[in-house]
Image 1 (cartoon, rainbow, N blue to C red):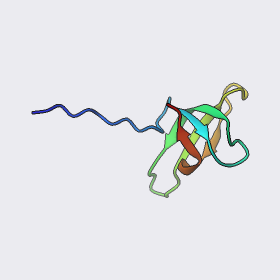
Image 2: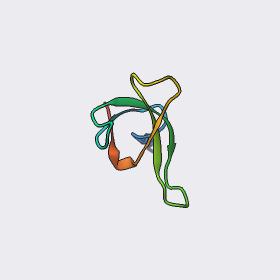
Image 3: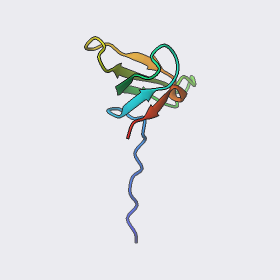
Image 4: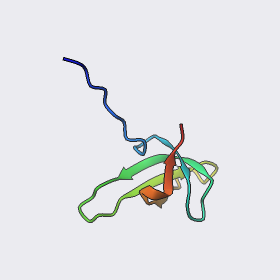
Length: 69
């Protein structure tokens, strides 16, 4: 039986992302919390933006972010 490698969600906690929409477009950061597929339908990803205040994060929609490789 072949081993199946786990596919990691590119927008999970700890991932590096680039913001592609809104007032922070073009900035990069690290995901600190990701709420995906919640019952109320509000997918939100909280990103600590590079150069921002320590402990400060901004909530984004999934479509506003892209994974940085």
